[in-house]
Image (tube, rainbow, N blue to C red; front, side, top):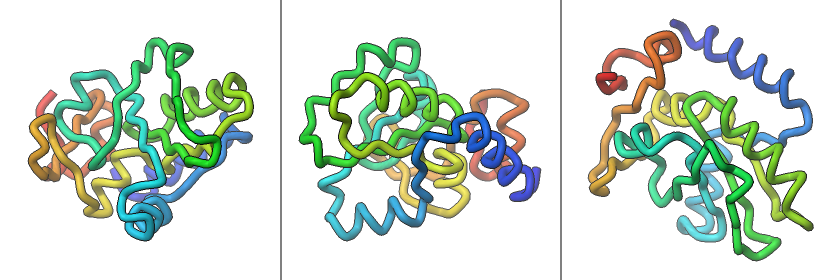
Length: 154
């Protein structure tokens, strides 16, 4: 699939979750660089199997099946960025957090998720902390958004 296909997916997610704040990969990368990786918390909302293949450096995995159990224990000024494969599942988590954390810290959804992050050539690490370029494709259908060189086997 082309980058146009990813843009269609991103548009659909924004339309389905119009109140969920977003941040682009470039904005997050700039933010992390400016704050030397601190001052922003990345939450990976994918299942353990996907997280083990790769995740954004320093990201914490949260259970996507039980987002109600996510306890941030953060300063109300510490921004939180949630992500998943393309942004749908993480939008659900952001939506839930915005309505349960009182008052909530600034919470954003990563536009395009880890797929977009990887396609832009940004740093990823696997479960052992080794840098990698590959991403779990989530499914055969959604994996078509990724170039073959970035896809791990299912």
